[in-house]
Length: 398
Image 1 (cartoon, rainbow, N blue to C red):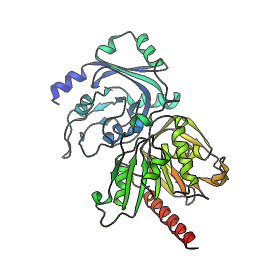
Image 2 (tube, rainbow, N blue to C red):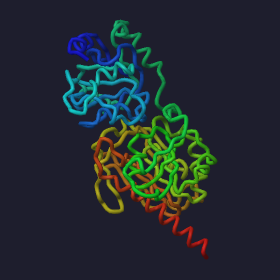
Image 3 (tube, rainbow, N blue to C red):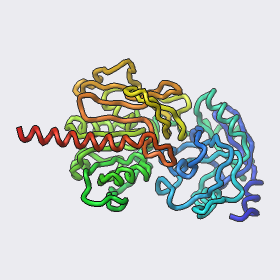
Image 4 (cartoon, rainbow, N blue to C red):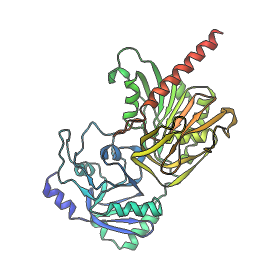
């Protein structure tokens, strides 16, 4: 995009209207029009392309706390899914032109091409502080002709929009057809070590790639997959991905996972998958005040005391006791412990089942873009599949 075109876009009036009536005035960024969703903030200093293409951000207006956005442009390699999923984008100081050898076009161009409405020139620090004090809330970005309407009418549109509580979104962002990611396509030589069924609830592209690099064949299945669909690919393990929406709406996935756990199939879940494991075990979930979003979230492994800097994107959490191993409310699954906790607010960040082969974390070990403290979790799942297979073989011989 030329500087002249960017200047024209920047001269377009735009408003960010929050549910509680707070209004921030700026100028247009990306496409023009109206965008409604839940206003949240992401604290990463880099990785904006991975952020906006993360399906977990569906129906959310993302505030970037880093003030300068867009300086490396966008390319076709770093997208985490088939499209941009944020409902709207809020930045303070967008780059006038990208400057990176991998850049193929500007961020502004990409937003326009995909019809994503944004706002620039607003005080993102003030917006972040407001959301930290009041909590994530519904909001609207109005630019161009839409910004000319009376403010009372704009606020009415915001307060009439859907809440994130009760939102069932995984099915909206998931693939409709299954596909396979082969280890041989990602540098692995020889036959696959294991095969897994990965349920796409909003999976990021880097996740099956991380498995494939370790010799695991990944069957990516739609969010609506049944236990019969899972068994049809004869997996050594089952994986549930990240994804958007309220885990209280995921009854289909919870029911399917309980059948996986009943069968003794090794299980690993991240983010939304962690919340679904919590529900499958009988625990509840709840909405966080403003969530965890960014690539700098500290988490402690309670077994080792090791602190990991993690990538996160979630607005809901599991309500499980942190006092030690307890019998799961669904007693047939035995004992479970909270394995990881957030060092910012003590939120449950992981579950570990002691009597069945299942564990999960609330954060993103694939971590695109970074950090990579948690990459070992992929190896842990492979070890779990290996030990389960060995135990099964021993039982069959006996």
